Length: 333
Image (cartoon, rainbow, N blue to C red):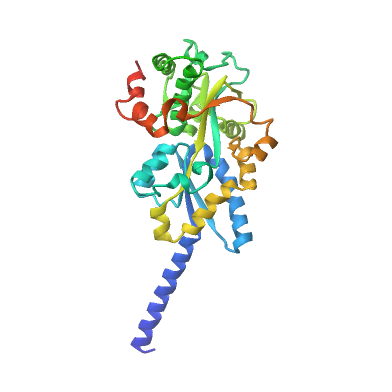
C-alpha cells in the first residue's frame, strides 16, 4: 500500500470513528432529575425507549442522574452535559434559563407551563401514628421531631417550607403569624436533609424524627424500598401544589445533535402511557382521565398554588431562601 493510500485509510477510519461517536451521542440522552423521581424515570425510560423504537425504528439509550433539585441545577450550569432536566421547582429551571443553558421561554415549550405532572406535600409518620399527628399545627408540638429537606438545597424542602407558611395563610393568618409558626416548626427539626432521598434515609434508616414532610410520591418509594407497613401517610387539611417542570438543555443538545430526541422524550411525558406510569408512582398526572381512574389513590386534599401567597417560586426564592432571607432569619431563631 502506498503512503497516499495508507493516509486515506487512516482518514477513513477516523471519519468512521467520528461518525460512530456522533451517532452514539445523538441516540443517547442524559436526564438530570431530582431524588424522589428516581423510580418513576426508571419505568418511564423503558416505556419511552420502546415507544421510540416502535414509532421511529431507532434504538436509543437514556441515562439518568438524581440528587437534590437545586444541586442538580448547579451541576448542569457548571457543565454536566444533561440533554433534559426534570426538576421539582421552576426556580431551578429558571436558574438555567437565566444563565443561557435552557431556552428563555422554556415554560412555553410544553403544555401546562412545561410541567407534565404535579405533586403535593404530606406527612409520613411511623406505623400506627404513635404521636397522633394530623395537621400542620401538630408539627410545632414540643414532643414532635420533624425531618425535612433544607429549603436552600432542595425543592422538596422549599415546598415543605412554603406549605407550612401557606397553611397559616389558608386559615386566615397573616404573614407575621406564618413566620412565627414556621420558626416554631423548624425548632423541632433535629437535622436538615440535603435532598428528598436523604430525608427518607434519615427518617427510616437512621430512625430520627417522628414525622417526615415530603412529596406524596415518596410513599410508593418507601414501600418499595423498605416494605409496606413501615409508615403511614397523613394528609393535612391543606397543602401546596408542587409542579414538576421540564426543559431541554439547549447548550447540550446543540453540541450532541440530540434536540429532536430530547424534545420527543419530554413530549412523551404527556402521553396516556406516561401519565399512567406517573400515577403508579403516586405522582399526580395532568390528564384528568388518568387522574380520575386513580381517584382511590390520590386522596382529595385542598391545595393552594405558590402564586396565591408568594407570587412565584422565583419571588419566593428571593424573599425566603436566598442568603439573608426569611429562612435564614427564622431557622434556629
